[in-house]
Length: 219
Image 1 (cartoon, rainbow, N blue to C red):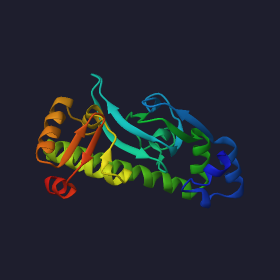
Image 2: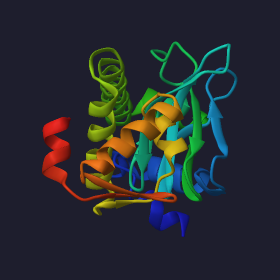
Image 3: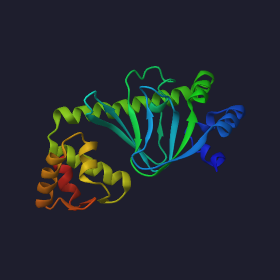
Image 4: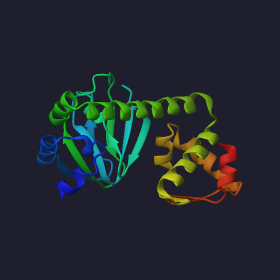
């Protein structure tokens, strides 16, 4: 099974025969439950993580315990933040956890280091992905600094709906508040207001988008 999954790695076609053999032999699948820790870059280096099924969340945690969501990733995407010992440009600690039950393909850090040293395509891939992730981080900071909370909620709901391909989102208000880096009470007030304007419907553990155009205008 692993042999078939490694062929989905974005850089697979640029590997030599020997490198493909190494990746097939040393990469492994691992199952994670929801909200399980994958990597803490302050004290560990996992390697490249390819999401076969499920999703992961990368965040920062302050000394006081305040958590800021940087980005989410889903099936078919790679996380290279978990390979911080390989990408020397990663100079601050992040926490990577699962958002749901997940199956991950892990390319170990030692193998990542070998590949980036000997294969320019793999090195370029890792740097490109990390640059894209940092763009997401900057966007998060821009929203926190320059957008009202109702605009942030509207943007988030639209993006999640596009990502899952459905107007019905399976997400709790706690998760939403954590993902947009706000207090749950404040997010609850915004959701009630949006529901009162018939833009969304709020159920237990679910949010239904009723008027996408209206949300876009707000966002």
